[in-house]
Image (cartoon, rainbow, N blue to C red; front, side):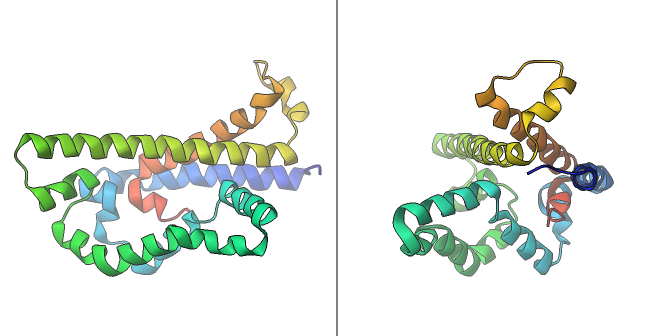
Amino acid sequence: MRLHLIDFLIIATYLLLTVLIGLYYRKKARQNKDSYMLGGRTIPWYKLGLSDASDMFDISGTMWMVSLCFVYGMKSIWIPWLWPVFNQVFLMMYLSRWLRRSNASTGAEWLATRFGTKGPGVAASHQVVIAFALLSCLGFLAYGFVGLGKFIEIFIPWELVRDYVPFAVAPQYVPHVYGIVFTLFAMFYSIIGGCTALSWEI
């Protein structure tokens, strides 16, 4: 499949919009920690719900689900019920009110509500939560960008762009390069614009 000029313009417009969204909400995100981490607690519930739902659909997950369907057949439809569905329901039904009342904006802060703010155990639990969050983010980024890169390689073969790139890339690492480029755009607007920018990713 070959892309035409209009296809490239759509991709470029999408990437430009992600950057502009991050820059637009940068001022609001800078106001205080709540504005950056929680969107100032002013984001409507439906927008948060749509944003969260859109996070559940990605190209890597789609590839994984199709692979499961090939391996297990139609019964693979039950596999997501093992964790994501019940996790989301449990968080919504039981933890959401508790988390809201704790006034915490991070997992490490929430531990203070459960275990207090003093003692070596509390400090150690904070460090563990921070380490887990960082490792999870890196893992999800790796999971996302490799799948995204393989998908993009189908539509934009490396032969079309390698003459414009000042370095050589081995064929097996082409998906990684594509994935890193698109991930950098997403990281830019999410880091600059905070939660409010993330809620516009739909």
